[in-house]
Length: 454
Ligand SMILES: [Zn+2]
Image 1 (cartoon, protein in one colour):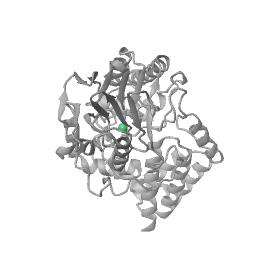
Image 2 (image 1 turned 30 degrees about the vertical axis):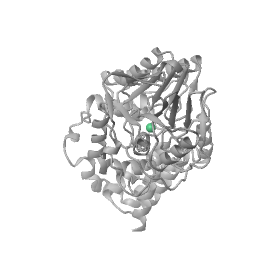
Image 3 (image 1 turned 90 degrees about the vertical axis):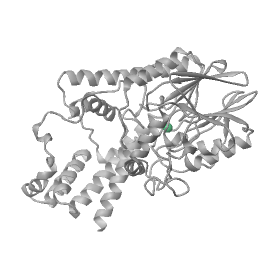
Image 4 (image 1 turned 135 degrees about the horizontal axis):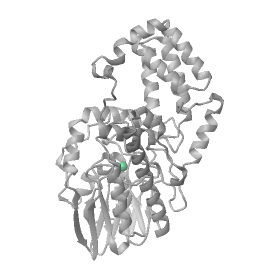
């Protein structure tokens, strides 16, 4: 039984212990978890601990100096850092945060003397990085991105309804993914489109500094790394988190290929940077810390990839692989944002698609087509709810949740099942230290409570 069992009496302790495994290492100071929504949106309803919460707390933000040339404002809660690199001929901005946070970042940086912006470099086309592009461009800078940036925006726009709902659920946004002004973020608006794109590499010269742009797909196909050799600084966007990466994100994504992450990190390591600046969290300073952290991150991704491939070739099912793939402690990575089991399934299905080999899967109705018979055979909703509660009492909240899912398919709106489901969701919520898991558990709670109120 690979399923984690949660003793109800130990839930609070488990949550505290899980949080305690996630503080930053010595070389990274006060770095938050790393989000990547598909669209710029507003936030609401904080119910979690501060580290996990989607609190829209922009108070207390300030400009942080990394060295004489680089400063930034930290992105908190689903927003990227905004970096500014000073040259003798103006500034280069790297990533712009999202929505209302972007205007706060810009105001702080402007007040700190960051004006006369030459270029705005966007590491990739996620809304938490490009939300401030129109603001910065209004001051005259040119927007630079990889040539796949437009195609990725088109994809996000094409599925805007889907991503709006799913992103709002995962990150507990209100209004299904509306931007700060209450209007849907128009990623097809020319204001978000780059002025300059490149293929594999491009160098921009500004005020005596070279800005080398390298195509490093990973979190997205259009992802770039910015290398400033005079500063020995590599801006790595979302190809490096504090947590295990989100190789599959629950809000939905095209495949994210682990071997691309590995190649991206190798490309960064080969530059021999002295400073690595991720777009979420604090910069990593110093060769030893950089080599240690990037190598561990790369090797963890390679390990998960190789375990999935081995399992597939050995004839394991996707669920067997999810349960089997581990994250050895030597990598010192938490699962506060990405999760190994989700990444393993995402990779399995990216390589092979959805069919698992059971002929029953070929037919449209699936299990839901017989769920009413299953409920009847079980003695009805109340009987299933009672069994779910018994499972919860023995510490199996995940099993209890599964039972209520099956029961509610066959008996929609059953109050006993909904109440048992709410208790299972609450138990799982209080036990998780994963931000995305918490978001979906909260979403499930909201749906169940609404159904109960009907
Ligand atoms: Zn991001």
